[in-house]
Image: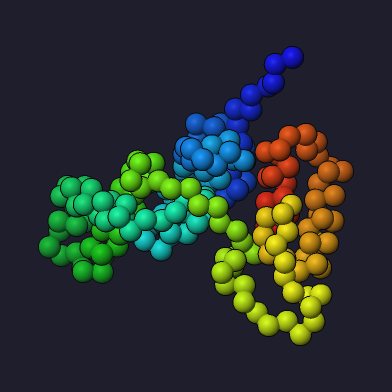
Length: 192
């Protein structure tokens, strides 16, 4: 019996199930069907400057490369040559800076999969904290976060128990019959 190919996935940014074509390729992220976790529409709406592009890269397991950002700046300079806001002598420096940042972010999204710009980097998280930032002192050893392979991040035992309870409720309410759907359910549980 042939395996059924899944042609859609859940965007973890807008929580919509969309066709795979609505997601950028992410050639080394197997658990996301070799696609970004965010749809292209959410990515475009979110990426406005260097800080938001870095966040997008982190959330979608991409390594942000300064070299790629600089290449995007060069590409953006060509786009700005036809930008009415940018060319208007009455436009303030602040508005010009915003236009430049936006044009650079857009250019980055165009070149992000080129060989010099793309590198997969699995980012482990505890909600909005990267694993390198988990350096707290704990008075009680049982409250200390540890890396959980199932939940792919650093959590306290109490947090893992809570996540397992949420996931168990999802298993009762939904059919979680493949790895991708199970992964989405875990992401939704972590988000809640």
